[in-house]
Image (cartoon, rainbow, N blue to C red; front, top):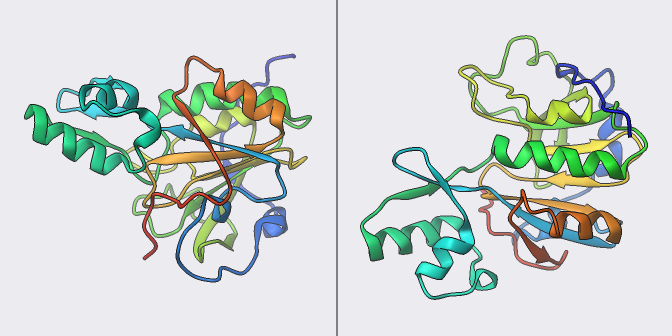
Length: 227
């Protein structure tokens, strides 16, 4: 596939690009299906890396092994960090409400192979974050489950790696291509992202060595908090 040139994020021309994701939210508990629409047959959890006090990253599986548990037993990144710090005295953290560049870049690379419109994708981020860049704050606002007001942007698939604030820190929480062949979902209190798509797409993500992933189901409890 010809490499798509990254274009900067711009405000979406119409809020209607998100209409297919707008649906009523019945209230807690949060489920994976809140962020990964059930119209897709398969879903995977993609983990943000853990970061120590020196800024070095480590995997969830490495920390889980240190604690003597399997990765499949881990549901909450913050609790994993707390348990690790209690055992070793070393502080580690996980980012919430954003996607690490180390996750966004390979995720975009894989997903570009599972859409016919990698040059036209849409992205959304919570309007409540401070520091959203002025040129993006004029974007249309949409209400997506679980009742989050979100700015709507557009760009190429590689625009997923772009930060939306100053100083640069946060990346978009939701992504989808114009042909709606997959959907990336995350929340403001989430330590992971969920990707829903075809079985072939999700299989490729599960086997992507640049990403740390866990099999998931739409009915799984979401590890974030509804507030």
